[in-house]
Image (cartoon, rainbow, N blue to C red; front, side, top):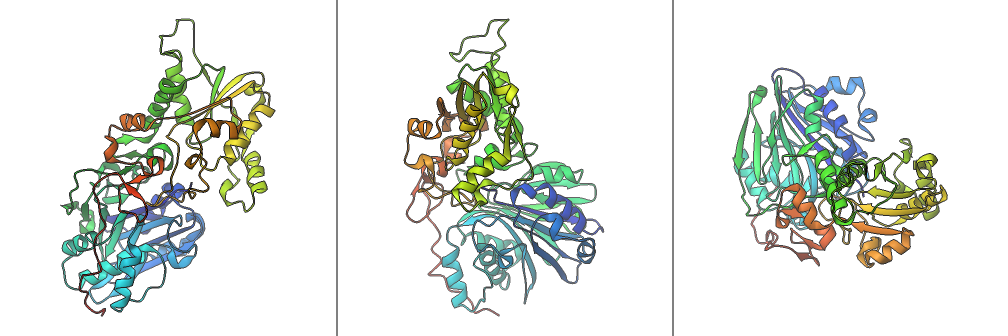
Length: 490
């Protein structure tokens, strides 16, 4: 799996927004490495710089100097919908009769094709196959006839899927979160303005203070010159559909999402993992980096109770936490390797065992997920080759049985090992001595949510959106956009 995207927007008091946006994008780099971009507005005209590659490669000193204006938005992208090229890089920007728009999108629409076809028939010309351009064109069309708030509400009533947006309309910056709150978005206060960002870590980078999350279905408009923000609750749903994988894997551990510190959530998920499926071994070790907080919480819980749930004796320290795998940070993700042999070799390039921690010991290794099973198979073999007497695998999330349509680049059902195999069959395939996943009820409990308020589609096969050919977990249907009369494009 790969991260989705990261969005940011700032409105400042007399200071150019480009550098704060640049630093914020660095803080969100983990959410996308394909492209990076910034759009600013100086009160007279819009400025844009969007390039393929990492943030540090996409911008030079001169590029930032040319992005003048105290208001702007930024984006880092991993392609989950649309082509892997510059035509889908963001922010997407247009100029039209009612001004200029810039738009950054984190998420994925499931009815983008319907709206694109309708708008194209009305004369809109599209330059990409991404859903961000669809949102931009629909909003621009509405702004020809409506004020900003009504135009956004009109577009929200037509698009269906997950989205957190940061938008510039001339020098006004706004943020929108989809009515089910699937993708994260938060508000922060800076010394001389306000910021909208996918994660609070971006706010911390700018020495700001987290104010709160943008509520599901809410439009937040940052006031000019960074004086404050206005809130409009445009859509209210009975239930949310927060992506639980933000807390399991995608978000930075130091971010606060939906009032929960990600690091503490992962530690508590690890504690639950011990309660549900703890096994007495000599050591417990994480698969770096995402497994580290899970393993820490698991070891803490193991120090308090036995695997049977009994209180530990005073002289029994439980299961030792140890770093048994070192990560080579200069090796790319294994999924980009074109052949199976290369993917298997990349696991050894990426992770190297510490023999003294492993040799002659029983080991519990903790990871956030098993997707195809390739990495887990190689990892178990690596530990056994290093002299582990037994290798028990524990996963800090439920088994992934179905793809994600909401903006996560995840394998197809045919590639997902858990889609058609039992836990026992997966255990045998990866050659572990035992295997256990965390339950969905444990995830909901740790996050303080009812299951119906989480998006669990990838682990249940039932989705919170109306997706063709898939089951839903609630009463939901996509908007009927085909019967609406559209004005011709100006």
